[in-house]
Image (cartoon, rainbow, N blue to C red; front, side):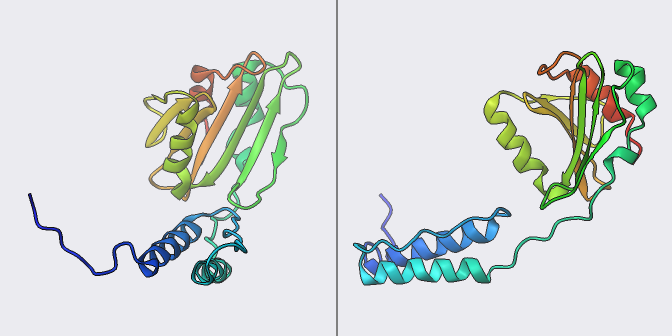
Length: 192
């Protein structure tokens, strides 16, 4: 059995408070979303209330992550390329404006109900987005699309090593049923 090395703080209220503060600052600093620090509990000790207040102040002071420039996704995929895959569109593509870490998108809809949505998000969110998407089901690797591409129950995610964004393609010939092959073919037609 190995001897235990002690910092002298195990179990002390100070070590517990430090760990709580450290975890709160790391979690709050790492999140790109708006989050709120835990509210002070009136029944908590004065020391715990102080730690919670420090976490709230750290959250307010933490710099927000910057997002990449908006991406004109509609310029990446022509109406003609989409119509070659799914038939005539019911109307012109609609532009989905950038907001927060959503860098832009474009939606195509046909008269028979086929729908395609292509959107861009910051490249540094790729792994986290794919990990989150795989909570709904497994990811299937897709060859010959971008640097890396995976298809999940929530669409195709395409990573490019030379771009500050990744692309998500949601393509359905039948409403609500995402089509892996169609998504991949459309992703290959993107003009970046």
